Picture 1 (tube, rainbow, N blue to C red):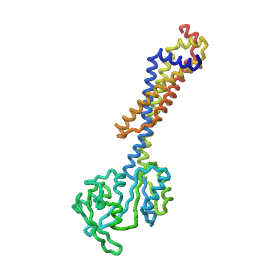
Picture 2 (cartoon, rainbow, N blue to C red):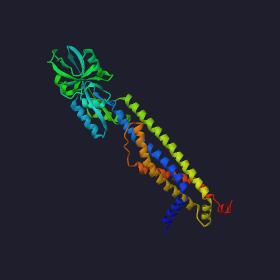
Picture 3 (cartoon, rainbow, N blue to C red):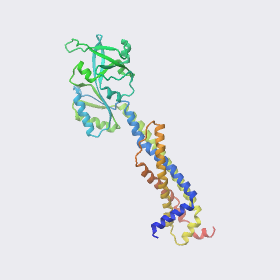
Picture 4 (cartoon, helix red, strand yellow):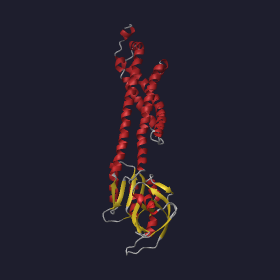
Length: 380
């Protein structure tokens, strides 16, 4: 029988004859591996998913005209293409144009946008009615609706004042819904960009483009520079208030998880080390006999190390599977997210568990080295 097979047979026999100790050591490794893998999954998946959710609650990069320049729809298309070329993950974006129109000869503020894009960027919009779908449908801010006694389903007519001071022909609109945001939109009439362009032509002028990018502050600053270099008429600005808040939340979450992971790893190491010390005490006579028959301390330590690594791999496998289940439960119950666990969790957990278990066995190496066959076999 060759040496590798003999080595594996010795480890296997050791497991069979000390099943209770093996189960105790395995249980401690499984618990540690389950906790570590679950925390690892939460660390690497939850912050990214939370970042995506946070990105749906407002823009973190705003593009506006540079100085006295005019920003147009074609410039927005060039900016979109430049961001795509640089591999930027765009969660959402929406363009806006601000204008004043007349209703009952009274000026009202109008905000034009793409409703599908804007509503995705601002899920906090509360609409009494429906989002505009037809070409003549608009949203009316709550304050304007209250001022003029209007509601969803009512019809209104608006005009634009031309540059020579005359009023254009009336344009009939249908209020599909009343918008409530708690912001400036409550005092505005919202319509589509094409709709406003037909009422007051401007050659596709835009006043602002909001971007929600999946990136942290240093990357956002770099992307802002890319936009400035792409279009001479555009100036990009990072929304610092939102960006710093998001970065702080995610950094705190990651730090907390890493601290807990280190503590769990240390406790697992102590547990494995304690179990191995008990095994050494239990097998003192056997180890002394091996030494008396010519076995070296190095060989015996290697045997213990092999047992620990096998236990670590086995416990890591079970723990990784348990960690995926625990991680899924935590992300669903605590963060209300669906877990997207990667395949690498299993092998990484097994390797870490084997390393921790192996390190625990080396703590007992000095005891094995110091065993004196004469004293132990003599009953002392």
